[in-house]
Length: 377
Image (cartoon, rainbow, N blue to C red):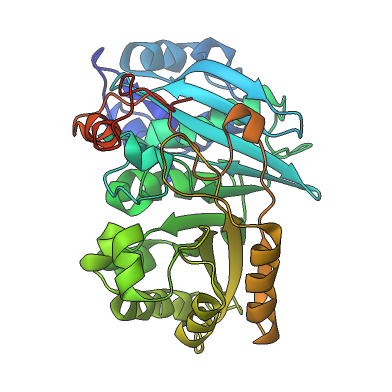
């Protein structure tokens, strides 16, 4: 929780953690609520601006703590209203956060890692390799930065961000403690007060951590499925070799069954031309999900350089959707948003200081001229 200055960054502390911090400096626990409101409701990072906190305590806070969000490198606004922030984190890497306004909702897509260790074959983030987990302050800091940029201060008034999805760069369940802490702040009334139904964690299938998640939080769950059988999913989503579909879907069913309230699993399925978009794949998906309450998001592939994949035709997308709908599934085709600022699903690449050299190998295998940054934002 402390940085190189030895100060505690209060931005990433949950309410109980903030109460413990105030006790540790000899102050009353109720101070946590006051300071948390200043940080998250008002976007304040200057202790002197916290007007209901006494001067002596403000001086004590300045000596022991700070409120420091990630550094904003750039902010781009798409022609369709989508926004993308590139923020630099402590490791030196840059990660991306995307805001998508649609039908009265404002959804913020938040990153959990610099890069990603899972290397799904159709995702440009994975091709950047992996550098580091983000701290809780760096995860919630993306919400803090976005909220401030809209002038939605206090957070309760004219709220621009209504939904948060942990679907940005990285696999959230491989950064478990920091992601859970950040989501707790998102849902806390002293934080952003977002409904547990409107905070969604998306996973590629880290089975043991799905069960751990159920013990500590009740956010909505999305599964990056992308293939209806193990042979194909092994190719597209390599973690499937460790946790095959039967094991994975059992874990998802256990998680959703504990939520109650008629909540369902969200299935994310990226359609790749000639790979997983055929009628037989739709039929296999129906059989696979027969006993799982779910809604399905179909995501037409968003091309990036040297991916080796293509977007299916509109007819193929519609045909796949209709087969699922006839079987009684609630199916949405996700509209591509923010493509002109490389903010579309699967396009987030940031600028990752790759510790795995995966990006070099990826380019080399395809015998593509240029350096390892080819295709980055």
